[in-house]
Image 1 (cartoon, rainbow, N blue to C red):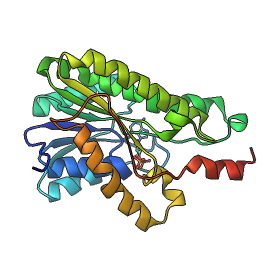
Image 2 (tube, rainbow, N blue to C red; image 1 turned 180 degrees about the vertical axis):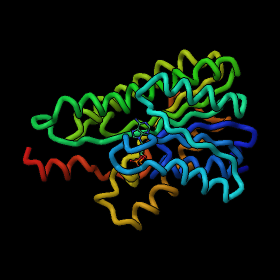
Image 3 (tube, helix red, strand yellow; image 1 turned 135 degrees about the vertical axis):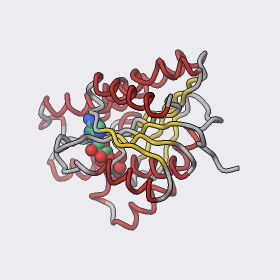
Length: 254
Ligand code: ADP
């Protein structure tokens, strides 16, 4: 039986692009009402201001239900507001996929401390704050599925990614504690490590490879990890094994 999210509400952070967008579309296709979170305005510096709205439109055209949220994951008050709006509209939150992310790759010798802080804020604090914002709702419901996005950089390190690797190792520690504290309330917390095929690695991938990797290798694994029958405390690697950091390092003269 295909996995269904009928009657469920899902929040996907950083869902205006890439993998987050793919998660949102597939959750909606399988019946979930989806909050498509991504930074509003020009705050991401990449001109994604309308990205979340465009994904919402795509979902609606396909007959699904979605709403956009412009909250910054690294701002807890904005995450609380997102969850409050979601509960008001749809009554609860069953699934949270922490996908928002940002890269500032540079060898450690040349890394600006501000870029270390930014990457840790978005990935580690962002995952903690978005999860904290849904936690009470999931406890009340006695049901919740949370997916953390970690990385091979967090598991084994990677050239040029001291900031990102540290944040992603932290995300794993967060997941492992939360799955213990959530167990009593049937809140299951898992992690996925998409090592390639995301937009973050698109610079080194031809478009065809990128487009093939995302839906085929990563989305089904992620969807299983937030489904009713999900395990808890799994770390699933999906997507391949090409490291952007190695390329950065070559060009950065370690
Ligand atoms: P991937 O395909 O690996 O998910 P992307 O860079 O396409 O990589 O997606 C990451 C998304 O996260 C982007 O759309 C970006 O705008 C979003 N994002 C970055 N920082 C934040 C943040 N602080 N809050 C919410 N979304 C964010």
